[in-house]
Length: 360
Image (cartoon, rainbow, N blue to C red; front, side):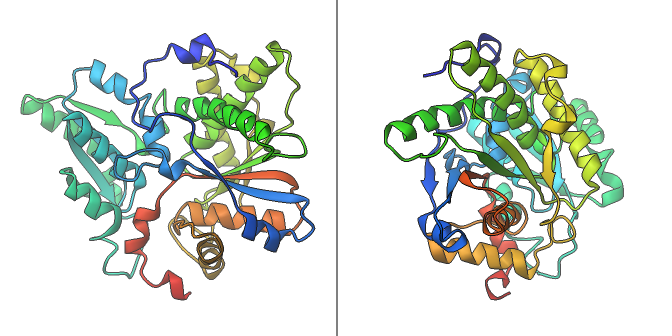
């Protein structure tokens, strides 16, 4: 079993996820439908089950390496921001409650929705239930709001700690998913021993949804480090591809540059050289974002229903629904083969704010 390199193992971390590597679930029914020949097998990494705090998800894993810096600063209040139905803000609220901290959430309408539940249920409801102070501001006010809140807290004798959107712009925002790549390597070893992985003996392609960039950026850096450790241990290299499925609708080159910046920053932190990661390592497929962030089209809703009715797994219309749609289309179109993994990063809690997608 491969151990974490010293540079990564020594980083301050507070464990917010459940112990041990997350489960990887074979999608037998969906695999048979998408690839009747059996040359491609589809699996699901259940990172939506990674924590007992407010249903967990990808941001909880990222915050394991961010929160130690908040605590070291002496902060008593977490301050962070996102859209009205942000998964990140919900998870920040849960962690604050768990650690006995206060939490101020700055939330703005990134998505125009005609659903009356959009501004009341879903993640917003859960964040308020967990005691977070939710401040809804307009798009024009959002940029300056965190600094204003920090000043206000200071004036009242409190100390806030700002976590940028999705923790992605934080220096340590990519480290959680760099570490996750080593968990994946551990799971591959276990699955090989149980005879669950044929072919290369590993996952040939790993798909993950990408918006703010630090999940994919961390995985890109972590994959590089994992291969270096495998090589140093005399193990054969795995020709693994890590592919982001864009759910933002933003300019694709800008998205790739954002992820590259995060991957390079993470690489330096975990013991690699910045130049070990290059733009060609950042692969993002922008065919499945349904036009814009937060918008669910009929094809995305159809993919959500397929996974639900064929495998009993729930995804959301903002992130993972678009990610699984892109993964399914790539398998169905013969663009990938072998062992294909989609990383389910959570977000189902937003469904209450998207009424009617089951009928689209």
